[in-house]
Image (cartoon, rainbow, N blue to C red; front, side, top):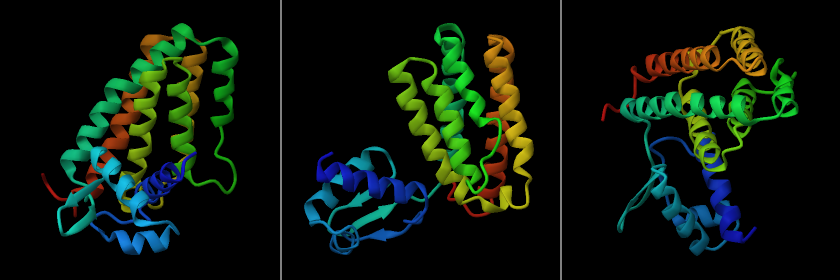
Length: 210
């Protein structure tokens, strides 16, 4: 990968993991030192991230990591509600048995792995199982951006036993492997809707309403 792509991926990852916090002010010079590069790759990366609505570029003022608003969170989850069931449908109709069987690795939460990472990998793998490259790329990007919502809404999942959510994933996998389109879509929509409710409940305490 070119240096500018490496820098872009690093900054994007840090934004989604909230290492660079929502609302944080960014300066090219400081970031160049932090990521051990020149200012031009930093500038190029930030302009790309602006197009993804993760950063706001203010002429002569610098940059800011976009705050998370209730409206943006709702838009993201509504998009997932439309896209992920479509990916699951194509996976059922097009994927071979081996591809669907490979989802069995998500029936348990690996010891030491954060739930957010496991959750992202499960939903992304299900999207890729569709075999529809364009649709899965968009779905995986939405799923990654949802990580940011979960990380800033710690109160919504604090103390929650992840076993219940892993069990929901197991039920989705069962339906996918049985190739039951209707039941898979119904359960997946309910699963995403519940995630949206948890995040919105937490964000409503502090998010910018826009």
